[in-house]
Structures are given as structure tokens and as C-alpha cells.
Image (cartoon, rainbow, N blue to C red; front, side):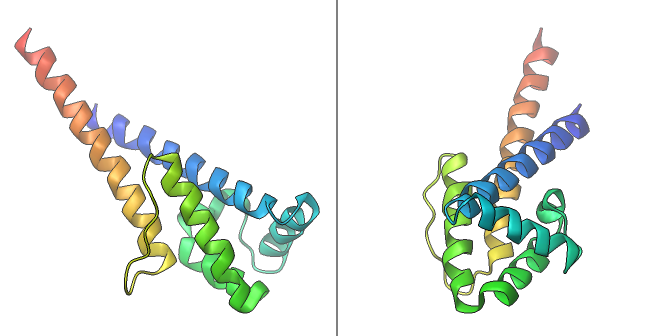
Length: 126
């Protein structure tokens, strides 16, 4: 059961991250968002749905495409991701884009495990 909960949480995380990326890139306009996804896939070999598995590479490629402007885009993505789980994004010293992504992923996993363990404990008492 715990494994199934982790898998579901992993799926939820991936959806939340891709949605945060979509919404953030959409601020630049639909055509720009599609262009970025096109370049990520055909120039760098990263498909949209692979972003959650490769956040470091995604961040590096954004930097290649936008140079210093990538900081704005990455911050926007992180703000939207944190908001999607009910948290406020706060900048932390020496944290990379991937560190923030992993923090949310780990938080969601931990919450799901605690909830699952509580459910199992209730079932055992019955």
C-alpha cells in the first residue's frame, strides 16, 4: 500500500511541476511557450514530460536559452509550484533550482506516507 501511495504522489508531483512550468512559460505568450518546448525537445532532447525527471538539465537549458533572464523564469516556476502545494516560495541561500524542486517532491512524499501510515493504523485498530 505504501508503495502505491508513493507512486501516486510521484505522479501528482510530476503533474504539479509540469503545470507550474506551463503556466510560467505562458506568461511569455503561447507562441513563445511552444517555441521553448520545441527547442528543449529538438535542440536539447528534453521533452516537456521529462522535466520532472531532469530538473537540473531543464534549468541548465533555460540558462542557455535565456542567459540571465532564466532567473526570472525559474523563480516564476518555483513560485507557482510552491503555491500549488499551499506554501510561499522563499529564497534560500545556496539553493539551486533542483534543490527547491526536490524539497517539494520530498515534502509531498512525506505527507503522503504520514497519511497512509495513519490510515493503516486506523484499519489495524478496527
